[in-house]
Length: 200
Image (cartoon, rainbow, N blue to C red; front, side):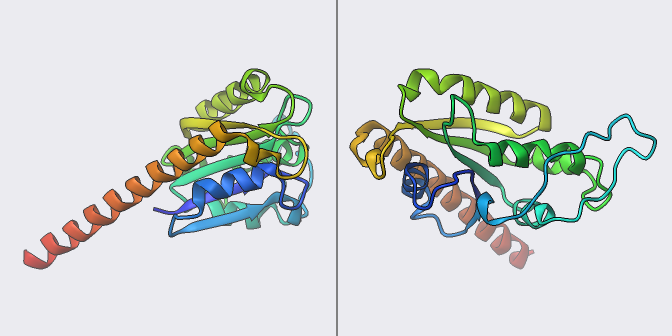
């Protein structure tokens, strides 16, 4: 099972990254995408123009190429002003172009075959004030077809504050264990299918 982690922080080794690493540290096949390391532009709304879509020359497609084959996507973002970061929002906004891009036929169908989780960390009562962010992601998943599975919210403002949030660390470890079990079950199923085929 291939897991793709999409980091939306603008900080190096921030609380959101530390919390997400608690989830994925024991998973065997993880692709980590740090959005701040890519140069990609804002969406240009061309829905009502004659041609409908014009290719954009930037590094956005490099991100899509990495997540397209992932079975699980983890969206990891700090909570900035009670929402996702601008770089995460810009990335998701660009999906409007991807669904019309001939290079990615059936983009929504492929997204519908993936599971999605959200990990977010904020400093102002995030288990209450981070819920609208989670709801926004739920609607995003619903629209694009992603199978939304759940979230982990943590509290932290200063560097490494997240390690004081025992509940968030516990929730992250539980999610990691869940994904690891799913991976083990999938591996067994693949092996059983291979054995069955070899016996036929």
